[in-house]
Length: 501
Image 1 (cartoon, rainbow, N blue to C red):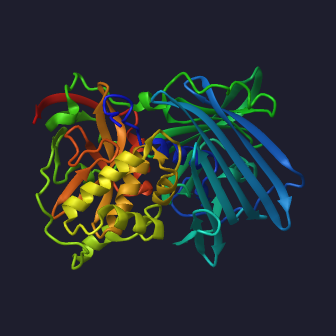
Image 2 (image 1 turned 180 degrees about the vertical axis):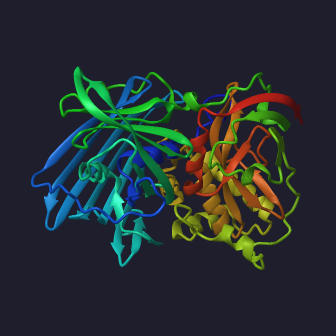
Image 3 (image 1 turned 90 degrees about the vertical axis):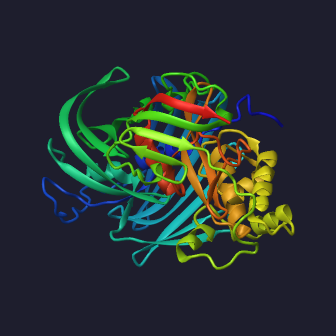
């Protein structure tokens, strides 16, 4: 299956989009209230009690093209409320029509503090299930399908609030221009925590569907990107504007689902692709690349991964050199005796389930009796390349799900290969950045394996090592991957030099 000349490059930043929308509409929020000072104010009790079922609908637009809608239901339940938030997206990704259905259900108490939640995300054949409950200051999170769950515990400093009830948070307060709210976010899709500061910046008139509202404009920043919200005087969210041209607008049950028959039009990946000042011929043969890079200094973006064994950043000049694979590993399999700082890359973690019986059995089947980690790593990469259908999805990657469905983009390829390597006793980690194809740099994910030194491996392209057009921006799981969202639309590349093998 030779697809290296076609649509083989499937971008990974779909997970960042998923995280962004869940933060805006259905993530967990640990709420604190600040106003013109740096110490926490006491929690204000909810001023409004909901006595009946309430429903809201919003339409989702990408650069003025409708691409989805959301529904929001809240109803009284025992001593609190039941909240459900559903998101439906239909997008064009690298020429493929891709969809995402997300449903967040939660139980909250009378002050809208979270008691439990369940999140489902479906994109084609790929499904993600995440549930959680609060127990004595700890969020107990379960991932995976029913009967096959994995448990993770996260300590909470403050009682969490579900993002779907944020509108109720604002409804319970009389907004004034100049108010500031600090909202430490917890995103269950990425297991990531991030503070968002929301400021009430103005009061203005807003027109939606021929109706004019008196609205408060609220502005926030997350991942270095500006978000803008408009609320009416009762606290109902009228409009939300995010980066990349993503917008939600208040709607109704009849209008919200209209116009979603086709997922054509603007390609989400093309919007954030980086086009250099000149073309790079034969990128898969690149052994050296030197770029002038603008835009890496975005607030809060970590730059540790920009300097590693295969790439160096000096001021704005980034140099990438394709490493050489050693003929043999410096250790044998099964492996032992690694330094403590290396063992973290051999352990299972969220969605890299290297201790899963199916993954362990598949790893043993693929490598057989091979004791050289270099040859074993190559076998594992070749297997993932040959057996995974290369198709973009909007979902949180999981090695277990990727092994079962055999479908996914670069994130599923990289996550599965990382888990198989760890299950075989080979330290491995995820790399997230950009790769060059079709005259642009697209966001991408691949794997690095420790074989005596760190060696890049791209299971989507079947490259070991990866060519020098692979620019690593961050290392780590999805909690790190969402950081690249702050770079969307900011990077500019000028080609200084390049060499082929």
